Image 1: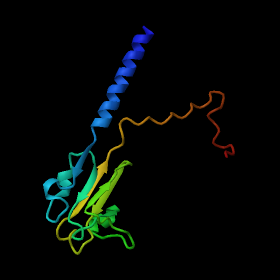
Image 2: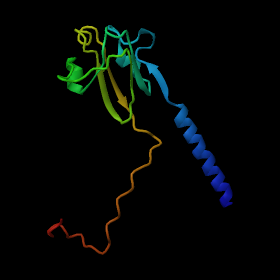
Image 3: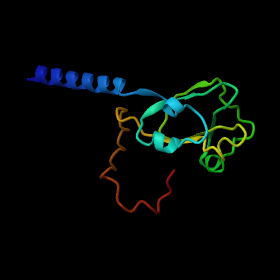
Image 4: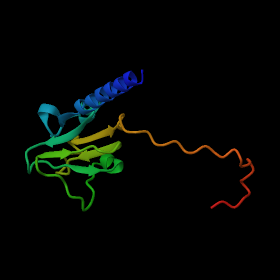
Length: 148
């Protein structure tokens, strides 16, 4: 019986790894339109899980990673170095909100050339260890004691 449980566990683990490794998809930002002005990147990104590739003619656009305030104001950070290759791959390795914009002329402000996405946590990553349970030997009245 124990060997059957091991086989089932290994089989389920293998399936989970296959699903995790095959579920990643590379998207070209904006699909056929690419990274350009007058495109609704928020609508485009809404239902996708991905790493991003900003594809555009080199020298015509660029890509800045910005914070939320800079994103709303279409402002490239002072001193930041833009991506400029025309085929810029950005790995989305940590969960959270990510914002990108074009810093050329008024491409962001007038042409809406900006992308805001939310990277979801990896569902396959291990859960953090639970904190240890309080010792039953300690009384509840420890608030007045000096604690380090």
